Amino acid sequence: MNLGYIDIVMDIQKNRIRRFIAAIFLFTSSALLWAQAPIEKEQKIYRVHISQTGEEQLVEVEAPVPGAEYEYELIYRNVSGENLDGIVVRQPVYAKATYLWGSAVAPEGVEFNISLDNGVTFLSESSLKMEQEEAGSAVKIKAGKSFQALQWVFRRPMKADEITRVTYRVLVE
Image 1: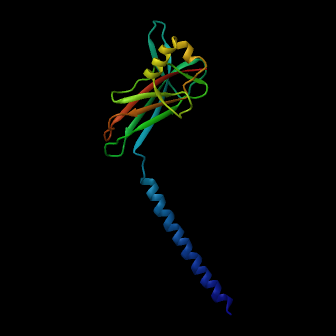
Image 2: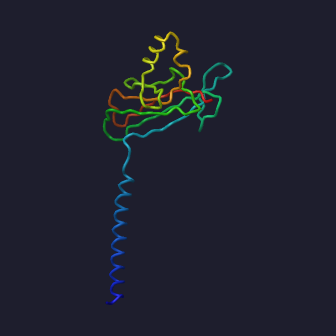
Image 3: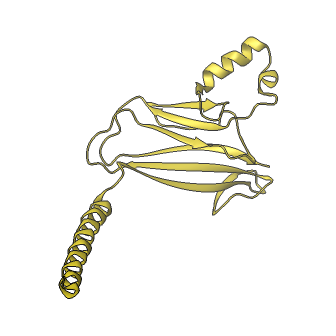
């Protein structure tokens, strides 16, 4: 048997396999380049500062540091080109931060919820407030509990190219 012939055939097969793999890579990588999530998210962090005149000022920072209050602004943009239904966005409350009760702001048609069990279940602030009132004291029900995750549920379609901003505040320990 001629081993030179087998080497040539093996080289040809190797080249075909290389070209096939390269073609698959080019096809999939170009598809990945054009693939885009339907919603883009941007996050801004502001330190809440009280001026000497007593006015509240928000100063944008890169990251929070302990011992201060911060406002998080989450900016969502629908880049899908069409209206989207059923949008739910979640945000963890980091271990060294405490969500400040009642600080979340969302536009009309977007419902805000809080999780006490690391995002397993979510309740509205108003339902938690009713639980607090039934318990007789807001302090009693909040004692020892921390809000571990926040959620915004769109009860309306998010329109194409719509930008929605939600904010909330935390105290960083």
